[in-house]
Image (cartoon, rainbow, N blue to C red):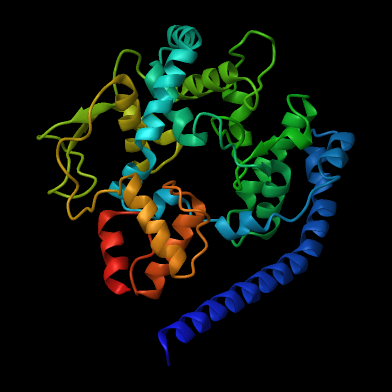
Length: 368
């Protein structure tokens, strides 16, 4: 078969597979809608018993729909999918570091006030903000009630956890902190600029701008103060860093041949925000980089470095020529490019980590 004919058939097969997957997903969503409807009806007595008003409940669920993406992404967090080296390279990017330095200048007086009040250094607060939503740019776009109700109803596990989160979210609405349509968050229900789960709102959300409200969606001072309050109440030690890279350190996240670290209690406090070493070390490293520190000295073992911008554009160009939808090659590794990389890796029998590395580009070029 001529290569051109084979290529056309392969693209047709990929398109057919995508159409079938989309149809199946639609059918699955349609089948789940009655389950969600029944859940909403059946959950109301539980919510009312917990103190949620009937009017708030009815308004919160007026426009709720089944969130298929929440079910699809459930249990697939990036920090548990990539290696720690790949995760840190991806998350602690030059773009995120430079943006953090801009935010340090823009919100300097706010951060200084928060640091004085809570004892949490401004760099760590900024790093959490940068990691969670890229400094407020990507809060998730999901209706929190729809996402959490879908997970409480239809996820294959942790339903009780999400039912508790749903009660907490309804109480936030009941108290008038936000309207249902403006309660925006991630597919997992994490809300606002620094991604608080609803059960964390009442004990930790703070009024950082002095207007008497706790608006973690629209007020940057509120979001940053809330993060500092969360960290301090979980044991943050003022005046103490998270730790440092040290040859004699006992923390070896990549094994004996990789970087080693000495960590303090504050590193463990960061993990209360997200209990993954890859996340905590990325926050810690980002805070150091915003402050002006350098890269880790010891290289990660068996680790291919990330691509520079020309390399990322070349990678996207190759993927597009192979029939993968990455949009216009622009050197930005977003969800579409990561999905394309993972799909190509799967076809090649490789671990589908979606990581745009020098080695990956070499593999794709040699496989053509």
